[in-house]
Image 1 (cartoon, rainbow, N blue to C red):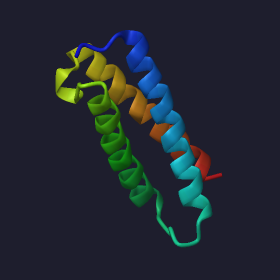
Image 2: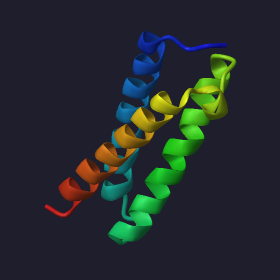
Image 3: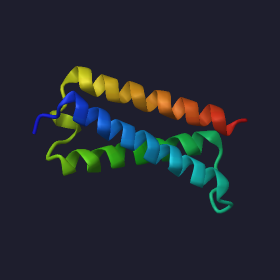
Length: 90
């Protein structure tokens, strides 16, 4: 299935909120004691897994996305993770 820009934007918005909540829950739960590198790896991995799951629900996957869309998705992931990591240092 070819995703429309609107559908992809909805997926990425949902994913941003999901990862932000996961980060918040992780940072406030005593069982999760991570330094910033571990947190970044964990959130990055979760982002990739959740993105793949969301795309599969639309009968697509990351390999079906055109290059420009992949780059936009990667860029957005890095912006989100940078923001979360900066906020976690405060």
